[in-house]
Length: 358
Image (cartoon, rainbow, N blue to C red):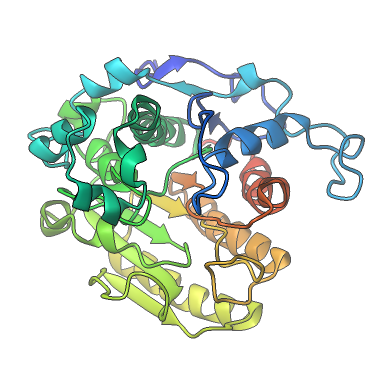
């Protein structure tokens, strides 16, 4: 008897009947209208990604796709996280049961963060917009749901997430609440998750975003209790200027290419898996390592990203470790190119395993 998916407000296509892709979590309000078009952060990328997953195929995008049909047949096939108010009252996010500082969380929810806090986050006056507050919470709830799904089916992904610059008591770098820390805390606390995730003692974050996952490294309570281990492979010269100390850090040189990247990745992930013996992996599949990304500084091709994602997911699947993939960063000016190619690759990789029982 499987415990119910308590983190879902709507179930998607039954993974045992889904021959095409592993469970994918999405919420239509991850993106919202009225975002400044010139803003560095492409707020519409989540909506476009979901749209690409449900429409992109050879007929609709002959120059992009070889798929005979869209990967996701209907938007109803996505699993949907808890709605805003339910997610807030779940106890997953803020202390004492969650890992986020309670007063910071309440200041954010009530639109009371200081101007300086909002500047460091990067969203400035938009931080207090109700739509931004809602989507920030939904994104975290989506990664929690992906944990439940991965525990049950072996692999799952969230169309958002990877908010790895946020600390317990502050946001930064376009991230406000750290979904990876919330998900790790949720997975390792059976009282909090109601037994929907059992026997997960050690969570390893494999963070391949081009920027260091400095915020995740600051969740010392989770790290100190031996529940959270952080691996960040990033561009050394890139943001943040002052690096944090992850469990494992690999700072790559500017211009690093596919081959150099894969050598470094295999080495550090292999070591981390051997040391940590994780019960769950949270994979931040940031596509800002792409050679065309305006904030990236690395020289990784689309094929290189595909190879990376496949290798990480393969490592988890062959070792029988449940894995959650989140999208992380990606700042390509042509958001359609971003959605159609690189992120869809990641979901395409997750799909090859179908509903795999771990």
